Image 1: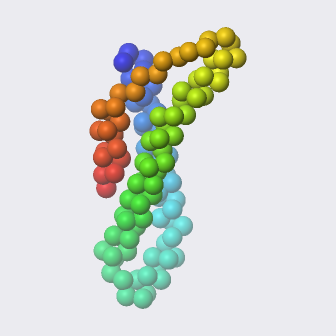
Image 2 (image 1 turned 180 degrees about the vertical axis):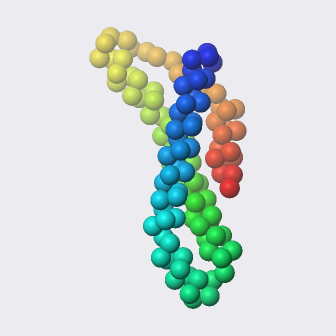
Length: 110
């Protein structure tokens, strides 16, 4: 992988984490009333925290289940559509399966 591709990958990864972090914070902020209700019914703060973490883990697992296959299949299909319009008939896309296999558990870390 060239230096330019590595820089682009790092930039997109940072943007991705910022977006996911902001969505998580927004989701937690929107549910503040629910957390208060849970505590009023007797849940401990640790139980409320655990429920938030469980919800984020479930969303992450669903995201990995849907996102990895789409991420592997979509780029080649889109590139084929785009390049066919300018006369390029075949583009080979190499997937580093070791990196894919290593990235899935990293996505699932709490």
